[in-house]
Image (cartoon, rainbow, N blue to C red; front, top):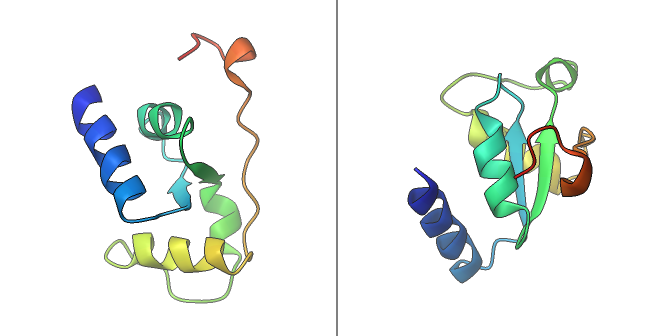
Length: 90
């Protein structure tokens, strides 16, 4: 899976993506955040905070909706500790 995430990182960079918004779901976000964070501006979004933003949120449109919210500054990123103090590190 690591090689696929790294390939995704290269694709996002090639497409000139500057910010990636990820919803914090269980621990599924961690490999993506940790491997993309070196090259891209990452925003980890708390699901309960997103539900408070007016608009339609469904599984089908989550990714586009979260990207739009992040692009317009309508959500605040959760704190992710820097690598030296993360439990388990990278």
